[in-house]
Image 1: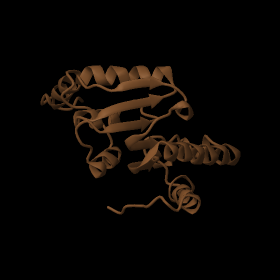
Image 2: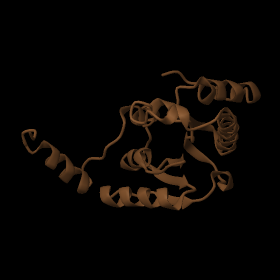
Image 3: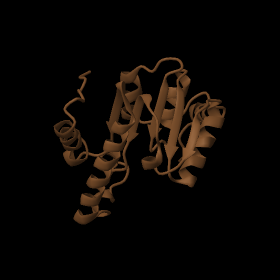
Length: 187
C-alpha cells in the first residue's frame, strides 16, 4: 500500500533543486548561528565539503574561502553553491598549505562520526584503536594550524560529529594548555 501523496515531498524536492532550501542537520547550523557572520568578513571554512556551513556563511554576505582536499567532495560543494546561487572561493588543497589571516575560522575536522551512528550503525566497527589514535593526532594538528591563521580578534569554531570527548573537549583543553592566550567564549 502506498502512502497518500499530498505533494509535500515533491514540493521539497522542487525547492531543493531550485536552490531555495537545502538539507542540513540542525547541529551543523549552530556554529554559524553562534558566530553571526557580518558582511564582508573574511571567513575560512576548513574541511568545507559538501558546503552546508559555507552556504550559510555566504548567505550572510561574508567573503568565504572554502577548503577541502577532496576533488570529489569539492565538486559537490561547487554544485551546491551553484544550485543555491551563492558564492565562495573554493580551494582544493591540504589545509596545512593555507596561509593568511581570517576574521572567522571554522574547522569541521574529520572524525569518527560517532554522532551519526543513528544513520550509520556500522560506524563503531569501522575504525580500530590505532586508527582512532592517528585521527586524534591529525585533529590536533589541524586545530594548531587553524590557530596559526588567527588574528587577535579571530573567532575559531572547532567541531566534529563525534561523541568521543577525545575528539572534542580533550582537543580544546589540550590546545588551551599550550596556547593560554586563546580564550573560550561560552554561549
